[in-house]
Amino acid sequence: MKEKLEQLKDKAISAIKEADSLGLLEKVELQYFGRKGGILNSILKALKDLSGEDKKEIGQLANKIKFDLLNLIEEKRKELSSKKIDQALEKDDIDITMPGKKKELGSLNPNTIVQNELEDIFRSLGFMILDGPELESDYYNFEALNIPEHHPARDMQDTFYIKGKEGSKRLLRTHTSPVQIRAMQKYGAPIRAVAPGRVFRYEALDASHENNFYQLEGLMIDKDISIVNLIAVMKTLLKGIFKKDVKVRLRPGYFPFVEPGFELDIHCLICNGKGCSVCKQTGWLELLPCGMVHPNVLRAGNIDPEKYSGFAFGLGLTRLVMMRYGINDIRLINSGDLRFLKQF
Ligand code: FA5
Image (cartoon, rainbow, N blue to C red):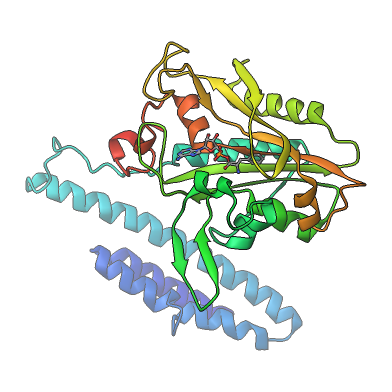
């Protein structure tokens, strides 16, 4: 067996040395190492039938030969490749002054970059990261959030409805708040969770309004949770993203699923509060509505409002992205325009 291997090695070495083109070299490589029928590979496979001592000795030898031959093939390949280039240069087949082909590398959408950072911040605060369906039921999007069928609050969030089987009410979710109910039902209390995701609205487009944008829902429920906890988390969030203190204002806001409810506005970073098309000349931008979870919502999530309390917020993630990067028109983010996207 040893002799056979040595003979095989000599034969392979001369075949490799004689190969004078990359094509021939590949043939030699296949002849010895091809997965199906390669001579050396077949020998290595047959080793398992040898007895203990032989197996070890012959195995080591066969592996060494394999290693040496593969190295030799690689060296020869390099030699033949550079020869090929030299020949082409001699024949003037290659124009070395021609610009090379640049490989285009993709990059993350700014929305994704900020979403990833937010997830890291919330993970460090002990929050779970959850997901919810974009095609939602009327129940989770409105009913369970204390917005019954003819409630005027539905007018503030018109959306795209999907015709389903008789009686089924499906819609493209208008906000990430339905994940609050799903999370409570699934995990119970206490709970800390955020749910980033895409939401949809039937909306007139302008510099700060899209019909397809991202929010990040936040929910924290435990014993004795108060507005103080809410404000502390909001501050940590904004500091984590902007890496500096930003001017914010908290004012009362109405959402049927929180009580009391607030609007947290951010001082417009596009115009530094002077007034522009993004902040509609007010100097402030609605960014982070929030409040204490309404007892009816806790009940819908099977949580006892006598025992637990909590806060929730619905961050306008795409608007945060605009503030973070100074983007003066929200429509650029979904535009697919590479001149814009390549900057991130
Ligand atoms: C809501 O969607 C509530 N679900 C938020 C909430 C959650 C309140 C939990 C209380 C507790 P609102 O419709 O204001 O609220 O939207 C939330 C944020 O999304 C806004 O502050 C804004 O930053 C962003 N937003 C709203 N509409 C648009 C739009 N058309 N384009 C881009 N961003 C928008």
